[in-house]
Image (cartoon, rainbow, N blue to C red):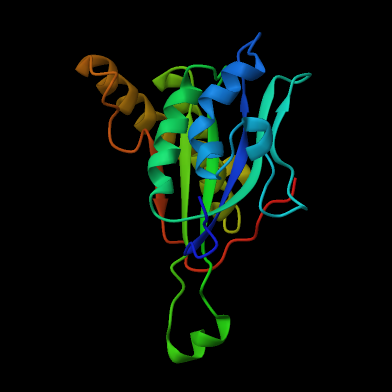
Length: 207
């Protein structure tokens, strides 16, 4: 499938701790929507990124990690691919993990900014994990890190303990609501991921 005229360069970045004993065949099956989207016949063929300087899709057997720093040309339909891959990774993830996905407008000319034209860039964070609780833990840790990073400009770290406690309370309430609903197949709003326009181009991660 030729994607030379695709409107986006899509970059997927993150690392997922895998359960012990995961084999390459299982990983290839979990990631099949991604490497097939890239037009490859196997994971090995599709693991290379569109950019040579990026590691691509790497299975670190020694550390039991799936490492992603991979770019593909594509369109909005790649979001469905991401949904399928996240569902598949839930089955082999040992812990909760976040995947950062950037959509870069491949046709955007930065000189057009002077004319008021905006790039169609987008950025989304998706979460995977063996259980809803594991996913919530990753969400909580990321939120605490973001909140502290912003507030430390104005307050000492020791003054922020109450803020962290309130964040923990919010996630405890969400988890209690999940358990009481008994609808584990339908996570509460926000559990599957979060996204939005980033207000500018985000740099690629090259590690």
